[in-house]
Image 1 (cartoon, rainbow over the protein chains, first blue to last red):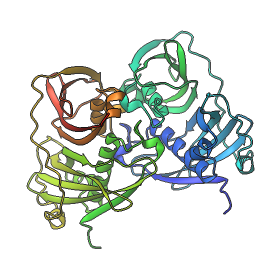
Image 2: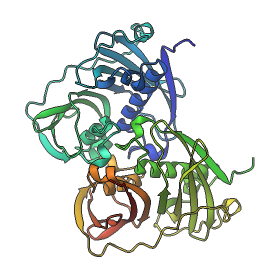
Image 3: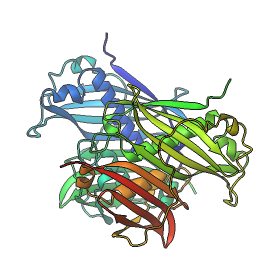
Image 4: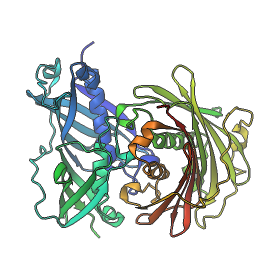
Amino acid sequence: MALAEVHTEEFYLSAGECGPEQTLPVALLVSRLIEVATNHANELGVGYENLMAHGQTWVLSRVAVEMDRYPRVDERYSVVTWMEKLNRHFSTRNFMIAMADGSVAGYARTVWVGINVADRTLADISRLVPLADVALPQKECPIAEVSRHRPVAVPDRCADYCFRYSDIDSNRHVNTVRYVELLLNQWPLEFHDSHCMKRLEMSFMRESYFGEKAQVRLAETESAASADISVDGSMRCHFEIKYDVAST
Amino acid sequence: MALAEVHTEEFYLSAGECGPEQTLPVALLVSRLIEVATNHANELGVGYENLMAHGQTWVLSRVAVEMDRYPRVDERYSVVTWMEKLNRHFSTRNFMIAMADGSVAGYARTVWVGINVADRTLADISRLVPLADVALPQKECPIAEVSRHRPVAVPDRCADYCFRYSDIDSNRHVNTVRYVELLLNQWPLEFHDSHCMKRLEMSFMRESYFGEKAQVRLAETESAASADISVDGSMRCHFEIKYDVAST
């Protein structure tokens, strides 16, 4: 069977999945990207299970999502994914979010790292067959790459949060998607009603665990924000956000 | 087309959906029950959209879930639902959670109320066609009904929580599923590692909103707990839980 260079999955946005704007929540979108990437990797024979047989695993390192619009309640949408490139340690996987009528709602870029589970060092993923064969470096993904993160120097606001049971994933780390929710929870509902997230960048440095007390540090302008989540000064992730401000 | 008295949906439990036990989280199970109930109601022509045309909507009033075991990562499971009965104001909908090999993982019972949106009074749902025709009062659901709740008299523990953006659903109320997570977050990870939730009962009294400061009050024994979530003394929901304690 020929391996599919492009992998597509279709979704239906139910009311129960929507946030207060009756659209696809950003956190659920990120969750979908991870799910679809995982399924494509499994299909290619380079999923978690295959890597774990060699004592290796995938770790999501960076994500950029840029949306022209978000799917609305009762709409169908597709997530299309493909490998852009890989080198010794990093693999780049891109996404297109398409609506049922063929229009494009947005794009995403992700960077994944292979690590050796035993000592958490970088693994050599360049020899993973058939990753190089299915890369599509020419396929268009018209959004900027994830920028190098610059820690928040002088925060406008700080908040504390303790990671709880429902934040923990099947690897017993804090779920990536929970970081997004923790970030978004720094603003009141009225802010989200008047601002639409145009672009979200995330960089992950280190995993967090149950019971750790995190600090969220946020610097913001009218239409953008930078934020860090750290534990005792050890940075766990960094965000860059751009908002469209609704005209009033 | 004949209306289906029994509605079944199949699910696959991906690693990304699992909690730290690598099983279906209770909160996600409750979310699935609501989703499947909604889809069956839509199919029967008595979904939210149909009721809203008459200024009415469904409100989930009570839930009881009792599980012999929880689906594990990479397992397929089905949620089977049917209406048990209805009277003027209440409708009872039951569920069976079945594994791919036909074994039964557990059952659930739910009670739904029809309300008039304008004044939040109880609506008369007994005339909703064809609800009475598709009720299956004889179909077995071998778990106890949701008991009448008795508020926690003397709590062993109290905790505060402020409802945030990511807790709010498309009706702009606190998501039912978030109450379950808020409850489970009262215990440390080690407790969940050594206890498996056998039965969960929930009764909902009133909706909660963004920014409200909730108090969780909890009374517990070795294998059971009662809990309330309230805001300024106004009770929002009540829980009764029974645990299986893992042998050590």
